[in-house]
Image (tube, rainbow, N blue to C red; front, side, top):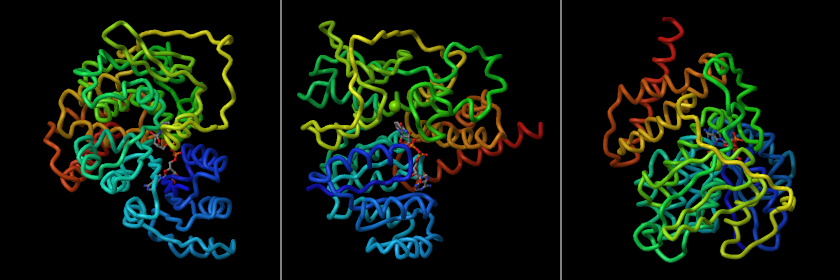
Length: 393
Ligand code: NAD
Ligand code: MG
């Protein structure tokens, strides 16, 4: 029986993970559940899954959480704040950590799980993007295993050779191809994107996801972050990672080998497949996903439109600049997306803000978490200032 700590339990990935875990109560128990501020939603999940510990990230809500758990007659212990998340990530009573917090807020708990040698199921791509070298060092030190549950990276994990840690030199890998759905605005021109609303941007054709990643998918920043994530997770040269648009989202990525073979993983666009794979690996378990009939498939592929969707090129530039440029890109993107979701920045303003921040702050080497978080804050205030100047100017 493996005990699972699920961070970001009230989110889209959190819900998919709980659905898979519930199907396998004989193999997994829920040890920890966490949420940001929604006490009632977290307490309801606790009533259903009976974890030992529930963590509310906003520390002012600890008493409210304790009361909500008591009122449901639960023995679950109430904890609050970032230290409680870090503590749970490394606690010896949990074997598996699912990192499904959105954004930079997931960084500390992700690194703590890596340092503690857990099986780390990584959905929180922002932590890999921000702190690639630190995450790799923490994994080496902890000796655990990271299994990506971002669907593309999970597909690559499944298709890469098991033999080696240098895939290009010894595994015959020529290229990683990340598939992208193209988002809700595939085929649109810049003119057509001028008056996009947050609800339009969040209406993804194939996936139901949280609002931040939905906007990232609409701008193609999600694919940009995923190129960086792939470089961090698989240690492959940035030039050997490419993107192909595949609107049906059935092929979740491809590995191209030097002998001309392509290996790909196909499946429904349903995150439960990747989550079930990563929970049980190297075994396979039921995920609850509807079966796919290959006779019904008709698959298309095309090149991404990087001129209209500038975020992909910006992410590649940050990866080339190396050092902490990906962290600055991520911070500026988080601020710009939040401003767009609050209607204080137009859709096409998102790449403008990110580009301005990257131009203003040349990249520096990544030395430690504290310095990185300082730089994250600097990039956030620069982005906020640039957004204010746009409004007033
Ligand atoms: P979501 O917005 O639906 O859920 C986010 C979760 O994080 C919630 O439980 C929320 O309470 C928690 N959270 C938010 N801010 C927090 C904070 N400051 N401190 C602590 N907890 C906080 O997001 P999601 O769609 O589930 O995505 C989660 C992560 O997984 C993101 O990094 C996203 O890029 C990645 N991901 C999601 C999908 C998907 O299909 N949804 C696919 C691939 C990768
Ligand atoms: Mg993905």
